[in-house]
Length: 601
Image (cartoon, rainbow, N blue to C red; front, side, top):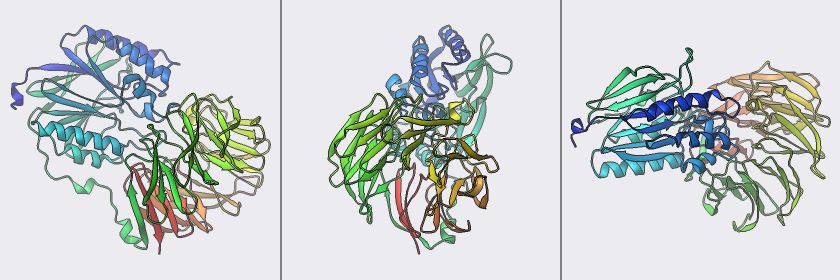
C-alpha cells in the first residue's frame, strides 16, 4: 500500500496517570484531560500506556476504568509496572476490569498493538513475558501475511538495555515487520530513544508538572508521525516528527546484546539439562528426590523428572502461579491467582483437594509435620492438613497480601506481609504471638518478599528499607539492626546456623554472624554482578553458597570465606531463588520461562 495516500488522523496518548485512593490529584488531572479530549473532534481514539494506578489495587483500577469510560472515542489500555509489581490479585484485576492487559486493533489500514513490559510481582527490570512475545509474534506475522500495513507498538518501558532485560527478544520480532515506532511512558517526560534501530518515543505523564499543569500527547499521522505535547488549556506544542514510510531494518547491533563470555571463563559449569516452559517462572522448584515441581505464569503446575527434565505430568489452573510450591508425604501444595489453594498427588498430578479463598493466592507454601502453611491475597494465613485438605486454622488479621514463604521455627510461624508487618503466630492455633514493623508506614517498604530465617533464638530479615534486621524470635524485640550494607529483600542461613547471608544492591554479598547480639560481619565480597534488586535468596548447601541475580547470572561462592568459585550466565532476566542439590549441583528457574539443572565439574 502507498502510505503517503492515507488521510490524516490523530489520536491521544495518556500515560502514567497514577490514580490512587489516597491522593485525589491524579484523578483531577485525568478528568481535565478527558474533558479536553472530548472537545477535540480530531482525536479518533485514545491509547493508555501503563502506570494507570499507583498501587495496582482493584479499587484504583476500577476508578480509572470508570473515568476512561467517559471518553466519547474508543480507548485501549496496557498495564505498567505499578500494576504488575504490587497487586493483591496476582496482576489479574487489570485484565478482569479492562478485559485484557494488552490490545491489538486496526485503524485506517494501520495496526496498533500494546502489551506489558513491566516486572511481575517483584522488584526487577522491565520484562516481556515469553507468552506475550509469542502472542506478539503471532499477531504481527498475521498482519504481515496479509499486506504491509504500518505497525505501531505500545509499551510502558522503552525496549532498550537497562530498562527491559530481554528487550532484544522483542526487537528481534519487531524488526521483521513494518514497525513505524514504539511509544510509551515511564520516564514522565518526552524523550526519543533508539532501540536497536527502532525509534522508541516516550511521552509526558498525565500528572501535573512543576508548573502545576497536567497534560497528554496528541499523535498525528500524515506524511510524517507528529508528536505534540498538549498541556491543559494551552495550544498543542509539536516536539518531534518521525518519517512515515515503509520500514526495513538491517542487521541488529550484536554489540548491544548481553555478553556470555563468562561461561567460557568457567567452562567447568555444565548444563545437565535445560527446559523452556510456555510461561514465565517467578518461583523456586521443590523436589521429593526424584521429581521437580514448579508452576508458571500461565497457571500450569509441572512435575518434571529431576535427572532428565522430562515432563511427568502437568496441572492447569488457568491463572498464574507465583508462589513456590511445597511437597511432603506424596502431596504437592501451592496457590494460584484463580483464588484456590491446591493439594495434588505428587505421583500422578491428580487433584486431591482444593480450598477456594476470596482473592489470588501468591504466597509460597511451607509444609511442617503434615500441615501446609500458605498466605493469600485476602488477608489470611492458612494452616491446612495436607492429606485431607481440612483447614486447621486461619489467621485473618492481615491488611494486605502475602507473597513470602512462611518459616516454621520452634513453636511459631513467621512471615511478612505487604501491610508493613512481620508476623509470628503460634503454630498450635494460629493466634498472634507478636508483630513488628520497621517504623515506616509505607507498605512498599514491608518485609514481604524476603523468606525469613531463624537460628539461635533469632529471626533475620531484610526489606526494601535496606536494613539488615535481627529480632528475638520469641518476643519480636529488636536485637540489632544495621544499614551498613545496602541489603534488600534477600536472606539465607548457613546449614550450621552460625552465619546469615544477604545480597546487597551494589555488587556485594555479605555474611553476618548469626550468634551474636550485635551486627558482626564475617565477610563481605564484591562479587561484580552490578546493581541488583531481585528478591532471590542466597542459599548454602554443603559449603557452597548459591546466589542468583536479576540479569541471569548464577554464582557459586565458598560459604566460609566468600570467595567466588565460579559464575554462569543463562539469559538476561530474573533468576529466582535457586534449589541447591549439593555443593556441585543446582536447579534454577528464570522469568524467561526456563528451568536449568547445572553441575560443576
